[in-house]
Length: 170
Ligand SMILES: Cc1cc2nc3c(=O)[nH]c(=O)nc-3n(C[C@H](O)[C@H](O)[C@H](O)COP(=O)(O)O)c2cc1C
Image: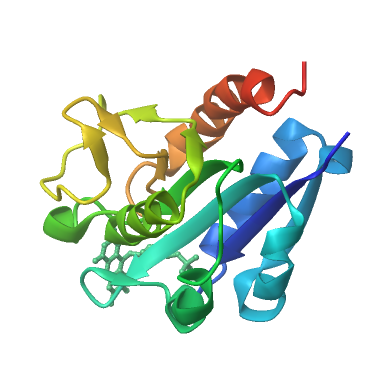
């Protein structure tokens, strides 16, 4: 079976911890973890991808993803399955909550990706439009370790249940 490539970008380490929890939930043998700061060029080797980022500087993509953008914009994701997750702070930055995830969605979509793992907006309070698929759904899993850390494990578990059939893991 093809492995899933999970690529994440992190500044203080939070998104990396979430990435590890997702890999554990999907089965560590099924997932290769990659930090985008070093391994971005490996992305083209995978048909199944999980992509994670935080948002910084009021609505900016995490720095390592930002640096990788010129290469990402040249890649072809036609025929590839992509699930997104984002980490952010909905109380501190409601207008730009998870903007980074929204930016990556736009880029992968433009490059032909097929998305799985949309996530309901119920239980969050924010105003940013960028991470939204529609009124009721984020484009991917929304994690807020700053304000709702107690919900994180349950959110990851539920999200991975959605991903498993989409990634052929059950
Ligand atoms: C100066 C600063 C700016 C931030 N800007 C945003 C923002 O615009 N949107 C958002 O959702 N989170 C924002 N955050 C919150 C971080 O994205 C959040 O803490 C995230 O979990 C950090 O993950 P990382 O350590 O993996 O980079 C900001 C945090 C700081 C300290």
